[in-house]
Amino acid sequence: MSRSFGSVLGKMVIAAATMLEAGTAEVSATPLTPFRYEAQAQRHCPGDKVVWLDFRKGVYYRKGQKLYGQGFDGSFVCQTEARGSLYRRSPLGLR
Image 1 (tube, rainbow, N blue to C red):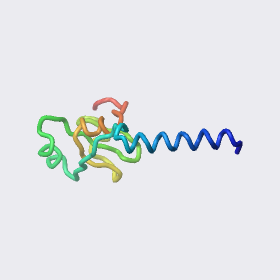
Image 2 (cartoon, helix red, strand yellow):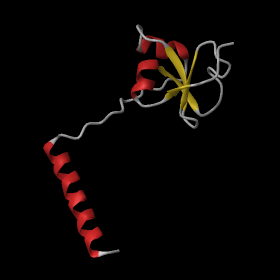
Image 3 (spheres, rainbow, N blue to C red):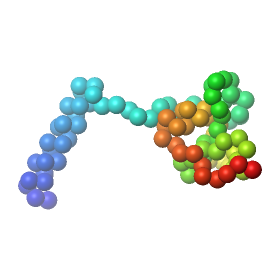
């Protein structure tokens, strides 16, 4: 590693630490509240749609899609929470 690269890297680390201390760093993801059952999720977010979130694939399925509620690596969540946590909508169509 060259000396100039090391000094630049050190300055970047110091700048990042300063931003965190100053409180200017923002977190873009929102917290997820996963539920085992669809009705639980609907009670948690009454004004929102409930989606099935596949954690392994990083996508969510809406009601009516073939993989909605399927699999062991998923959970029911509110659609706005899934979008806010940077999960993407499944490209698969509705049944």
